[in-house]
Image (cartoon, rainbow, N blue to C red):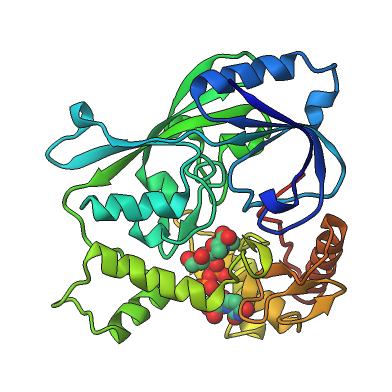
Length: 347
Ligand code: EPU
């Protein structure tokens, strides 16, 4: 039976710890309950469904504070290997959308199924991972997703999306562009059997080298995971101690001409060539140069260890976070002529 809580406090359900309330909080623990939630939404008065929200771990959103009508908290469990779909070159693993992402990654590693270790220690759920195409240390989850199931809350139909249909981009997918429409119920991952550590990301390569690994003594998957965990612990705030939603801005992508002009003025600017000839710039560097690293605006602040992360020092509202974000965007644009785009979903 679908569990419906009324007048729910959402503060503890978003990692930023921002206050907001929902008229109804529905805890969805199975595909059947997802269908019941869909019927519940259909019964709400016209117009209020616009203020509904599908919630996983709440680690990639900013609640502005306006009351929401209905929140669907996805808690569908399950992890298994799909034996009929494994082959000599790869394995197929399925997980329920409500599984904790990091626990799922470590479980795959414990089973001896590597491939997701670079994405260790990312907050959130399995079902939220494809929505923003989580990525870290040289890997995006899109590279490992075979397909997923999502309930269309508009039609009530359960649909299967292959990776192409998900329309993945940098921190982007069809699900992020159509908020409130698709409730992801399960995700399938294709993991390679001929595993090689992915060490193209400089910071990870340095961490592994410091731990004594080299091309002659490659790390095992769990050792890569441990190195990633150590890097993230060092730089990113623990949401249990300091509210945040991870990177607050996407790394901006500019054309080669603008990048060259910026490099002429700022030779130290970190930049990463993209396959399409564009250049991705490090937003954290741009923000730090504007003097924001470690600064506060009321209860909202820019993290002292990583300028791309905005934090709630206690008691901040969505409006406080957005005020700080707007000041940072204005300063970066004023100095570098580069537009920063928020990475979390603004509700
Ligand atoms: N940098 C600074 N100052 C800062 C922060 C970073 O100068 O305060 C510089 C670093 O020195 C480095 C460059 O910026 O040269 C890039 O920094 P980092 O390696 O920390 O990665 P990032 O581009 O800031 C991205 C993802 C992270 C992911 C890391 C590691 C985005 C928006 N963020 O951050 O993802 O963990 O790479 O792969 O793409 C997230 O999406 O929430 C997230 C944390």
